[in-house]
Length: 338
Image (tube, rainbow, N blue to C red; front, side, top):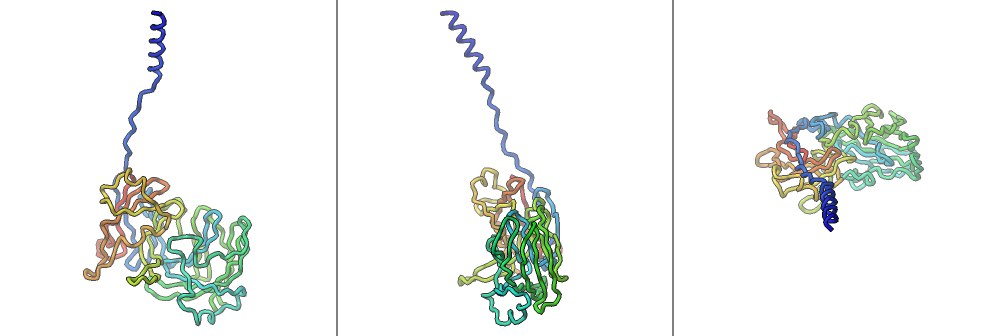
């Protein structure tokens, strides 16, 4: 019996020695609070792409440098208007390109023009579902001819109209036709999908030319720009407006709005259960407002944003809209990797 107790003690001791020691879980480490800015200019001419991970502006272009954007996202063949120009489109329903002209704009009222969905939903663009059949990466077009209202410049000058027809997609290449309403300046263009981009742009400034302005999709998080949004009057009437603020990268970024904490109080554990939106205009323009009495834009100090990105979760808030010379159009912000 004595030997049994000794053996039991040895076995029990060996079992205890095999149990690993508990390792303390290190506390979550956040990054430093950083500052960023975007030099859009007093007329908001510049579109500024910013990377939170790289902590810098990665690309800048003028919003007047393009008209349409062609999706390069997998299995998506949406065509978007340049919302910074306040563009809109009318589908004539005609399929013969030569039959569309200036007479088709004469009696159009505002209800017959369409704008892109301001949330960035690609199933709700103004051009819409332009194909009738789809087989993989080959799409057969309905051949409908659209009239494109090119919107305005940074100074509010109207930039005219184009008629536009999508001929189809084959081998990841869009085929389109575009001209002036009278048929002059006719261009047929092939636009290859670039798998490194969310969109490839074309400009009507010189007929129709490809101009890849957007950085590669994994190189940016925010695009500071003018864009077209649907707002409501005090009477509840819906109206389209041109507004200014950052749009988020639709492929990687989800956003939540917080008004319950001060920026300094937001911690990693506070943001895990937030509801995040994929709408590209969630940050939008309401972090500032124009004070008529002061004749200046005022930053709303109560609004914070939490962004889920490919690199982690960030908190962000705005601290200014003016440069050192007192010129508007220079958003300033603080952000931190949580």
